[in-house]
Amino acid sequence: MKLLVCNDYDEMSKKAAALIAAQVKLFPESILGLATGSTPIGTYDELIRLYNAGEIDFSEIETVNLDEYVGLGPDHEQSYRHFMNKQLFNHVNIDPEMTHVPNGLAANPEEEAENYEMMVECLGGIDLQVLGLGPNGHIGFNEPDSFFTPATHVVNLSKETIDANSRFFASRAEVPHQAITLGVKQIMQAGKIILLVNGEKKARALKAAVTGPVTPDLPASILQLHPDCTVFADEAACEWIYDD
Ligand code: F6R
Image 1: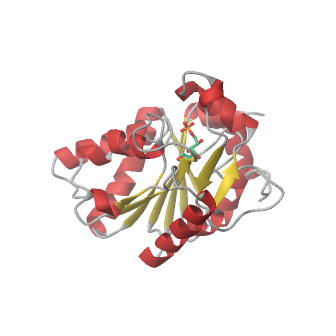
Image 2 (image 1 turned 120 degrees about the horizontal axis):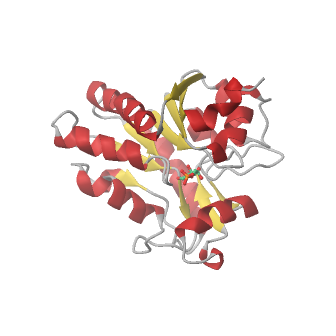
Image 3 (image 1 turned 90 degrees about the vertical axis):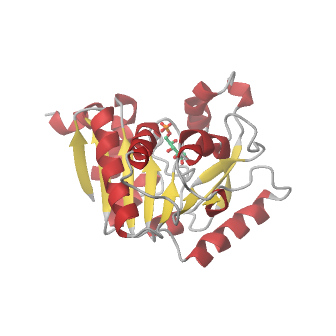
């Protein structure tokens, strides 16, 4: 695991986008694993800028998103499908058919999770996975637990995640309580992983993920075992480095 301390959010976003852009240029048929949330927005903005500058081409890229809220469809402003269309897909030349997000409106979410797992398997897995970090150490929606869940699954969101994500909804009561998420297997099998972390609210989780024991209680800690994981973090998330 490599930790790259960036001056600020802007530098973090640009450096991470440069690595993704290199993947897209060198391997134009890559499968990109993508995250939502506030953290990767700057990275996606930079990818759009690089696309508009003629530096990258998404025409053969296929994407697999990490997760989706159970009960939210593409028309819901807070669905992750809506987010991806708005923040990236609508602005680059990616084929919409080649973008995958779990269906939050599936009648049987467990079956949707199984099908999603098979779909990723059939694609041959993920070449480069982008991750954000939950304040409780989650990656995707793999929440702290007493065990790691390998496969794509339906998860009950923790109180901390519901609290953290309520900032995107009109009220806390509107935050869905369940999501479909890739499990740690597909994430850990990705060829390359980029973990994006900014802000002091993530400092505790980042320190534990990077320096603590590998434990399902802090799911991101498993990334220590990945052979090619780069953490792009801003200074605020890394203040613990300078302690003592
Ligand atoms: C989103 C996801 C989550 C977020 C994490 C951080 O697809 O999988 O793990 O990356 O909750 O969210 P933000 O970036 O909003 O702080």
